[in-house]
Length: 354
Image (cartoon, rainbow, N blue to C red; front, top):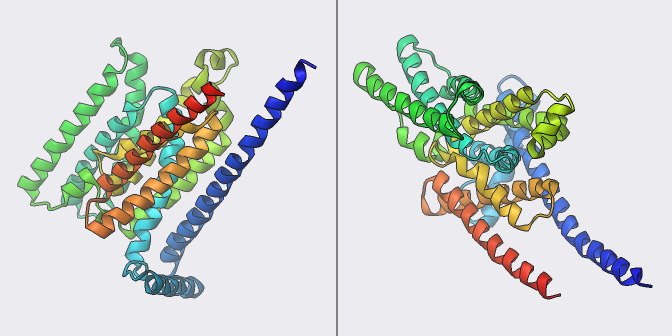
């Protein structure tokens, strides 16, 4: 008899979670469908010059955008460049919180900021390389190479330095940004190189090119695939690294994998969010989800939902008011975070009372 109230309480608790799980799964389904459509658009944009069916489907996509503009009273969705920007943002809204969930739970939030500054140095290296060789490719590919090398350097410094805590990360952060500013200053004076540095610092939708959208789509698919394949191992190391070592997991390899994925995400997101703000997308949606979620997996799912809402809301704000995309997305993300704090406090009070 004494166990009956407890059993009834558990069953009612489970029933109360069912609508919440349904909403989360429905939201993830919508995000997955949107991401698939955007990756498909980027693929069509790439293939339309060599395949007639791809060109036809691409035109149909833009026609659908014209109808969407007609019903919404906008002049946005009929343009290919705008869909590239939206596709890039949608990918960022998925992979940044996905990787950020592991970083936040491992108390490595500062690493995103460090790798963003390293990527900025990569942009500077790319400028010098283009000025010297006349190469006509995207700066982001060079920034990606430099960013990954910077990630490996951070990992090496962390393992071999005698400094305490996150001192090596702070040194790498300031050092890479200093190198970037020096190279850009030298390139401007010696080679007359012109580039919109503010776009890379604060984020700008005009920075997104067809190459940039394509790179972000490819990297996003790769990151999602790697996280799906190594989810259990990364989870084990995140919560108990010592036990993972005892279980003979290659902790060093998985740590390197995580930091390289972070560099990949940061470089791709830099074109929309900017160097200064890109780390916010790794942290804020995860912090928002942590206020409401009850498990790591739920935090992971909810952070993707909040990240996607922040990106789409930030895009709407940036386009409507002609504002920088990076600041708009981060402000919307912070509003979600503050709302989550309010809701979680209210929920905690209700639970403690009953």
